[in-house]
Amino acid sequence: MDSDEEMMPPMGDDYDDEDEGMAEVELPSDAANLPEGVKKEVITEVQGWKTPKKGDEVTVHYVGTLLSDGSKFDSSRDRGQPFVFTLGQGQVIKGWDVGVATMKRGEVAKFTLAPEFAYGASGSPPKIPENATLVFEVELISWMSKDDLFGDEGVIKQQLKAGSGYKMPRPDGEVKLTVQTTSTDGATIEEFQSVEYQVGSQKFGNLGKAIDKVLIQMKRGEKVALTCSKDYAYGDKHPDGATINITLEEIYESKDISFEKDGSLMKKQIKEGAGFETAKDGAKATVVVSKATDGSGNDLPGFAPKTLEFPVGSGEVCDGLECAMAEMKRGEVAILTAKASLLLDPKLGLQDAKCETIVAVVELQDFETLKETWDMSEDEKLEYGTARKEVGSQLLKNGRLQLALQRYKKVTDLFSYVDNYSEDKKEKAKALKLACEANKAAVYLKLKNWDEVMKSCNAVLKEDKNHVKCIYRRAQAQLNLKNFADCMSDCKTVIDLDRTNKEALALLKQAQAGQKQEDKKAKGLFQNMCKALGKGPIPEPGKAAPVGDFSSDEDMPDAAPAEEEKKSEEA
Image (tube, rainbow, N blue to C red; front, side, top):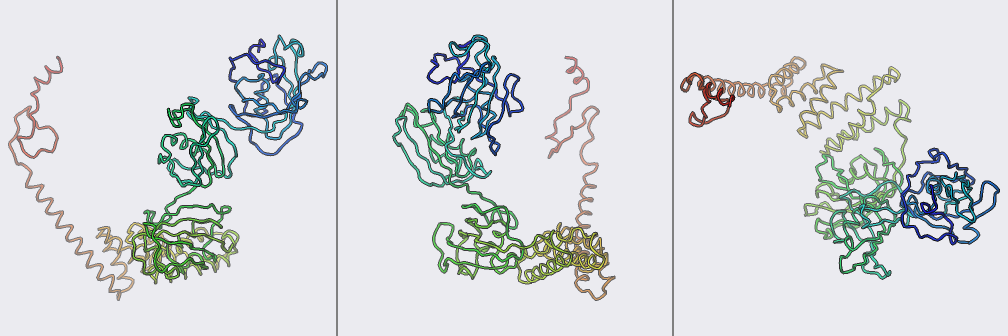
């Protein structure tokens, strides 16, 4: 900088601030990008990575000396009062803005500033001579983040307490928060303690715009203060504006955890679990179901809070709880909103519930930690896979189709690659995989998912072309897809392999009847097309009808004669 009037030095009581022309300063991303003329030496190093950003209110202690003779010209420590300024706004000399921007909380660093980053050619008499290089020892005590949320200075955010984790609310997400508003004299205007709120719902009226804007930037446990002009607060009722203090207590995560992802089973997390691990298939879980109501919030007769212990994925509890266990973490609490049939569990006294929707509060207290499949030996994988196949087969017999399908999928995924197995175990793994793939086809048939039936059957037949059950199941899918010729071909193959297969003979007759009906439709369509040929008057030259779907000759616009078209183009 070239003159005293362009700089705002951190000189405490020794400097009279009469300059209103503060210029914003471009800040470096880190110490490696400090400009030439600013040298940094870390005296006390700290862990972490966070540094203050432009607009943050920073609090520092400093001691300033001249490089030429080491004499001290200013010190906040001598005054016993830390120095506070807004970073990047030109309130201090340029070297301070760019230097402090690279510091972490608690760090102590020494900055050597060339004159152009300090007081320039003129200095700051009497203590700082002309063209002086200065040395500052700076301790960054803390900072408060401040952001202009809308870019119009109508709402200034100040972070009072940092949050934890990495999750932030979605623009339409649900949260639990405390909101307190105060006037400019500190008097409380309104207070809402631990309320549930959906972002964007405008529950807070005119305050909602500012609250919604900041919430999607906040983390669990974070506290902020929003200094709002009247336009973002209470209007003319409080013309000087207001401060909105917000504490984000909980972020509710809602997720569709139903088998078909059709919204029939929704999980809303109301308390976050620990870590990232979920219960593995077959692990024993301890679950508390503390509340169950209908869709209107009425208690359900017969229900009593209960603690359940069961192996995950084995069908000992209802489908709703099984789906939840696959998605919940240890210690998590969630609200399940389900189609009633998914939570009709005798263990909960809900087998006779007469309602369309059941809402239950569920906590996954703990679960057994099993070995990861990639850590298992070949023998352990075969034992685990065999056990899950047997569970799947029992579930299939009991009509728990989706749950059975998941067990079979886990086995086929487990043995998706077995080339590195020893030869005897490789054959066992392949046989187990094919058996589960064939059973997947059986489940998909019952679910009427014909395309998936085809995929599973083709996967088996690629390895065993004479697998009678899969040829027959594929034929059933072909019939429902109206691929009658392919269905007949598969049926004949089954009959060639098993002359006594009555089901294949019956299916063949159905396919032949279906093909006959299709042929009849096609013949009728062809005949109607032939009847229409040659009908209607022959158009005069130059009167060809335009392409289009017209119900009668009268609806068809005449084409312009060639000569008229030519004149029109020339005009």
